[in-house]
Figure: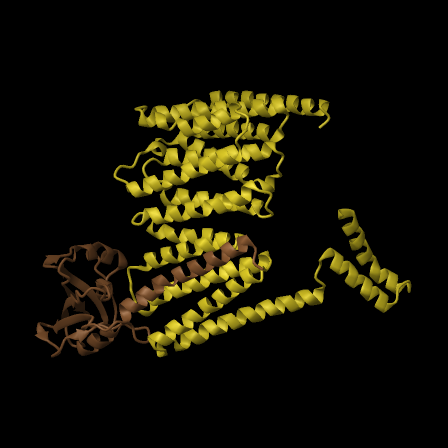
Length: 420
Length: 154
């Protein structure tokens, strides 16, 4: 298939030359170009230009309508204003019914879902604007958001899922006073993401990216309440577990964003844990609703992980992730913050060594480099806050550097022997 | 002929769409039904009652709050405005919130839960340079002692 496409591209590039040399006349050249474009599903430049003009024109009409209504808005009576807002909702109803009854394709479903959610959101928000009910804006926002949720599932729409997840961040404004609905809204979209990730859906890679956004939202929204060390490490650890598993299934890095994002987050969290005792600060008197909501979210993430990767091998790398999640509990059992800081320094070193060994044994460069990154991070962090003399630090750096070079050398020789 | 999944989709879409209309319809019915004056706004300027009848707050007209347009031109030479805010307690009446319009939103959030009888007194200091500032706020007989009570330009 790909060879065929390459041949088509080659033929397209050769057409001007063939026409110049008189091998093909103009009409034959044009029909051949048209055939190749259709086969390649490429848009000829003119068609692209027309599409571009169409989108610019549609955007300008939309902007003009907004300006028009803005200019005359206060001259309309309440009922006229409400009727204007009801027009998009009526159209969305017609489009939605048309899509379902005529069994239209996925593009129509995506459009219907987004249109229905936006039109109903507008209709829900407008009475608030018309009657100036200041103070209940958060209620309106939450209602509009929850209204969009069923349309995600009805139309199986990944576009609306994306919009919904971005809109969730609008709830952050009320994270302290209004905790539960935000996290419930996040949990509400998880089955959709789980559905796409667990199947051979064309949107599964995008769903993985959306999961990161969703996790970030939950963490920011309510995860930093009470005991940030535990909540942030639990969520990051869970994502790292999934990332490693996908990586072992030879998923390309760009198709597996979980590994990169969670690994960098884990590095940052462990560096903070090993540097600053305030990382283990426990905040008293936090909202119980926010606390329960967050742990409900993290529990759902863990359950999803177990459902997605039921037969993952339990190796030292994964035990380390479990340890990273469980170690903060020691602080709750009475271990003081300086001791926790010391424990996490040891853990960072051990985790780095475990990753290096694992990468070495299985000849996996990614794991090996991950281990090196951890050890280097530990060295850099401690370089700035240990009170050793400059001479001792210099010797330590030389020794560690030599060990790293030697380890790399052995690793690459082994790779060469195995013919990789 | 509709397939079974599409039939389920059709029913779910129709039901959810109809359900989603409940909220805006409830809001419109709640605000549009006839009632006694929605809120009453009595005010005095430098201790003397300025108007004979109660002033009814209405929503914004052309982007301006009507009571601001109404009061400030009439109190041009005054030093202080003493505003008695007594919103309607009738169920379904618009909330007390925008009586507190001059205050910052955070302060309104602090103050509103304290209102029990729905009465508040607001003293506004007017400056010759055209600015104004809330200098006293008494809610249900108790003064509110936040440092920043709000203000603006006339």
